[in-house]
Image 1 (cartoon, rainbow, N blue to C red):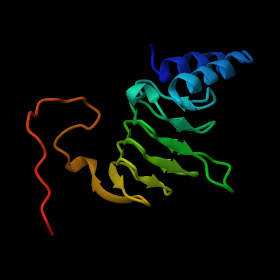
Image 2 (image 1 turned 90 degrees about the vertical axis):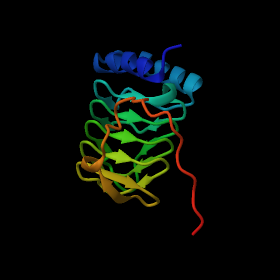
Image 3 (image 1 turned 180 degrees about the vertical axis):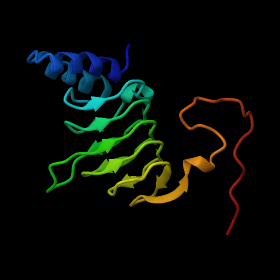
Length: 164
């Protein structure tokens, strides 16, 4: 079965052509099969996709998501009262599983949002953020790999935790 982004792209095309009812019907199909809300009024750029077929993803109406973004399972991109504006996400942004982006925030290009982070403030270009509420914890320029590439070359396991 195709993923939620496939159905979103069809609904978005119909929405842009001002064809009534069908986009809402496709949004309902996305909800039923993927337990997700991916409205046709949201803009999702080329090359962006929802991980694990988009299960549990919620995107608010009119949100803007750039090109080549990765949106993890269970992510929420939502508004926040009393603001009218909704999140705007740049290009090449990685949003970890369970992350929440709330309010009229701007996430600039080349950002990594850690799993389960709660982002309530705008994030500058090239930052890594994590925590509740999210704080800058690093820069993407310091990584020796690209988070957006699906690399599987290391056959080792992570080191064990240490006491204290």
